[in-house]
Image 1 (cartoon, rainbow, N blue to C red):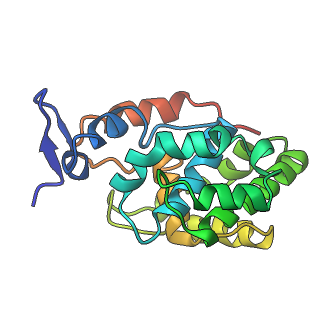
Image 2 (spheres, one colour):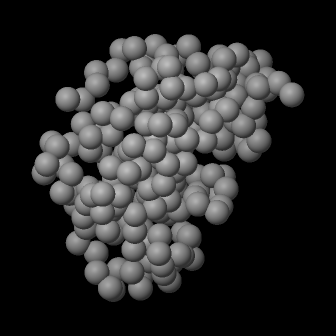
Image 3 (cartoon, rainbow, N blue to C red):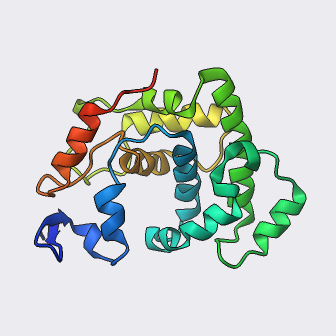
Length: 202
């Protein structure tokens, strides 16, 4: 089976991007392009944790509702959530109503505030775990890596929840710490160039 499909514009893209109409824009403009914005990094970790046991299509379609429900994933705001907010979120049919995952987002928001105080930014911490090329195989053949395992362990030591190594690998793929576009995907070169030009936070 080919690793790519031909999009409506005639360009080759990663095969998964053709499995749902809403994946196309996400694939072309977000997935695999480097991110240093702390809110986007925090949002992605939260959404990856909500995806556990579900499809990314479900989560992507609900992303606007998640953003509305969680104050745009401003972790300084979410860290202040209490029991009333948990009850509100459990009653919000627009999102995934899973108590453990909702409470994990609130917990992780507090840990994110602590991380910014200690590191200066979330980006500084996360980009420290950018995998070296030699630990990565052919694109889209891995579900975790030594670096995603190390990142998972580091976050768990700091008290973060729902941050297993597979979840962290998906996070790294999406946020551009890895360029995992298929070798014949026409977006791979654009992601490579974005990564080349990206100023790693220090």
